[in-house]
Amino acid sequence: MLEVLIDFLVIFVIVCLVYLLFINRSKKDFNKLKPNDFIRMFVLKYNIDINKINYNFMVNLIAIINSFIIAITSAIIIKIEGLIWSLIVCFVVLFILVFVLFDLAGKYIKKTEGKEKKVKKAKVVKKKTKKKEDEK
Image (cartoon, rainbow, N blue to C red):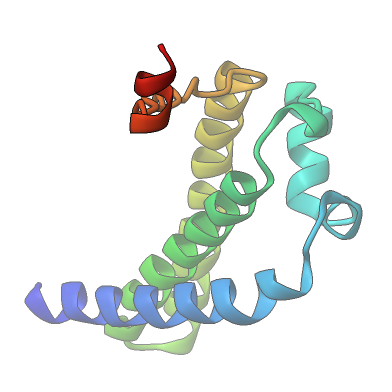
């Protein structure tokens, strides 16, 4: 069991780093990301307005979900002997993970769509200079 967990963590970190460093760097704005199947799925199924969501959040969320799906499927497949059984299990696990994780992500994105965190700006306190005090 510990071996499966170690395999999962190693695969997840490698896939996530590759995804974030190489694949997401080429996509700087939503115009390049729109043809992506995952984005189309979010837009069509959950009626999400792309302009109301944070681009970096969306790209990172897709990267983490895809990395998780690849890592967990690979970690399970490594431990199964036999080509036919590993293909069957791979298909079932992939199917379930893709639909469940992207469904949860779509609902979360729809819920938080358009809600931006309000950042409190720090108040700048101006110090009085001696010249201004002398003038008074």
